[in-house]
Image (cartoon, rainbow over all chains, first blue to last red; front, side, top):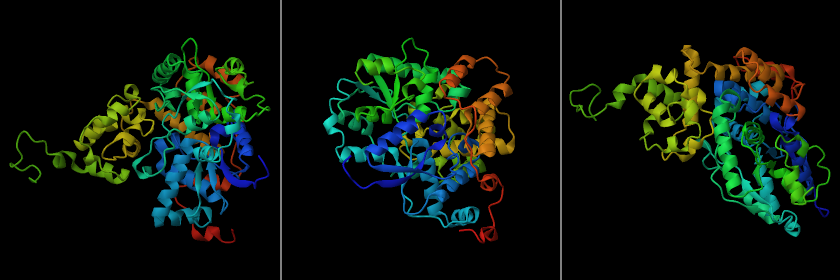
Length: 284
Length: 201
C-alpha cells in the first residue's frame, strides 16, 4: 500500500494458529501487511481457556483468559485470530470489568492493574477495515468466477452476556465479493463443526460434515471458506464423502487476490488439496 | 400463587416451585441465569446441531432441572455431549444461557462424583487440561496419544493421525509458555497474595 502509517496491534494467535494451522497464521500476517498492520505477538501467551478447560474447570478457564489479558501492553488493541478465543477473552474482560473481587484476584495474580481500556479486536474487524477502505476493488478480476460457500459455524452465536456484541453478518461474503468472487447461499453456513466431538464422537461429526459437503456440492460451490482453524480441521478430517470440497481460510483467499506469491506450504498443508481447484481458476 | 404442596394446587397443575427444590435454584445461581425462564418453546432443540450425542435436547435438560431431577440430569450424556456452541442460547427467546447451565451441571456432576455415561469425553478434557498444565498451551499430538491409550483405542483414526502428521497438522514438539511460575499460579487453588507483587512492575 502507498506510504500509510503502520498500525501495531498486539496479536493473540491461540494454540491452533501457532501450531497445526500455520497456513492460517502466515496468510493472516501476509494480509496484515497489505493493510499496513504490524502484528506484535502477545509475549508468552497461554491457552485462551476455551473448549476443554472451559468444559470442566471454569475457574481455570477464567484465569487462563485473565493472564492473557494481563500480558497485553496498554494503549494497543489486541487482535484475536480465533473466533472462539475471541469470545473467551471478551467474556473474561467483561466479567473482570464488572466484578471487583475478580479484579482484585486478577491484580494479585498478575501484578498488574486491570486495563479497562484494552480493545479486543475480532479478526472480522480487520476484514471490515479492508472493505471500508475499499482495498482490492482494483483486483476484482482476481477471484472472478470463484463460487464459495461462506462458513461461519458457531462464530456468530453469542451467549446472552455478549448479545450486544457485533456479529459481522455477511462479512465473508462482502470481502470476497469485493474481490470478484461469488458467494453461494447454502444451509450449512451456521452449523457448528462439533469441536471436540470430532475426537470423542467422530461419527456424529462425520454426519454433519458430510451433509455440509453434499450441500455445498449441490449448490455448485468451488470451495468452503472459513475463518476458524477448528472448523477447518473438522471439515477436512471428518469428511468421508467421495469428493470432499476444499476448505480455504479467508486470509488465504484474500492474500491470493492481493497477489501474494509466497504462499509456500499453505496449500500443501491442507488435507483436502485445494490446488487443483485454485489452478483451474488461475489462482496459483 | 398457591403455597408449595398446598391443597389449593389443582391436580392438573404442576407446581414447579415445589418440585425443583433447591436444585434448580442452585443451578440458576451458579450459572448466573434463570432456569425457570424456560417455557419449552423447543427453539433450542431445533437449533442444536448435536442432539444425537446429547440424548436429551437442551430443553429436556432444562425441564429436568426445573423438575428437580438431579440424578437424571447429572448422570445424563447430554451435559457431556454439549460443545457450548451457543446455537441454543443465541436462538432462545428468553435469553437463557444454556451453555453456562451445562458448564455448571458438569461441574456439579464432577463434585458429586456421579456415574458418567460419557467418561471418555471427560478423560479427553482432562488430557487437554493436563497439557495446558504442562505447557500452558495445548499439544494436540500428546493429547491424542494419551486419550487413545486411555481408551485402549489403538486403531481408529490411526490413518488419519498419520496423514495429519505428514501434513504438519500435529506438531511433534509442544509450543510452550516460558513463565513457569505464572503457569503454576494458574492452577493454584488460591489466588496470589498482594505482597507477592512487591518489586514487580
